[in-house]
Length: 395
Image 1 (cartoon, rainbow, N blue to C red):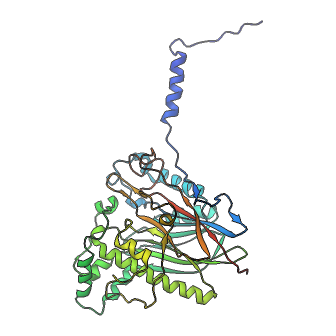
Image 2: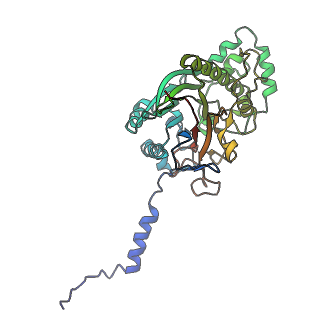
């Protein structure tokens, strides 16, 4: 038998070589987490198309605008994962792996340069509205081209609320409402917003208070299935400051009014009763006035100057609250950890949630030091729902 000589470096022992390899593996950066949909009790989440109905998935996600990403705002975050080159790749990975039919995104500030084209490659068409004023971010709805057809859309500019107080020169009625709303906001503080210079003007002037440059989108889609069912999807981002709870409540009420008007328009135009889904970052915690307004459809607390329809607003129900309970948090930073993001739907015999996107617990290594990080490229977590439609109509 031929002997083979093996050269061994005496300065490198076998144990130390293994230690070096192990060190390299441990130093590898974590990959973005891809949340999974889990079924509501009694539902089969793996069957996307069952004999008794069609299913589709919708995700809402505040992706954190890069314009707000600075190390001074997020000192707890690893510096490399705050850079746009890394964040953009991580965001795209998360969005791709979610596999949603509809994506409602907030704080989108690279729409033309990044989101629009990259999402088209993944099979999504989109509609987008940029915030008014000098703001560079906005909200967008991305939808799978092979799953739905856009048939109607409207944009919401909450600055239109300024026009609602034209008839009251001194805004006294609004000021009364403002006094009643004080102390009813949540405790959320947006690190990017609170540290960023923002000249908000005279807070006692109702026209100034209501001009917060916040926006939303209303869109109607016809599903590409035998039923041709029409659904209305709303995506919005409500103002953040808990000390301006009156403004947040005014925006929520305006959203409900515009939603009711849009649903009626869709119903008349397409001779149907559309299902309604509302998603977004509402910057409001469960149980506060904004949340209660949205889930109850009660306009009793609307400021007097806003012209209200006599028709009762669309009643909405939170997907998570009606299935597993609201998450303990959807936004996670050292300064604030709580639930701010929601998916609401109008309950009917035609639609029901059969699944939801699973969220990590507070003790998970994914979130333990706060977001964003290598696991999650935003300070918010994506939330999602799988809906089942039961329709008799065939187009």
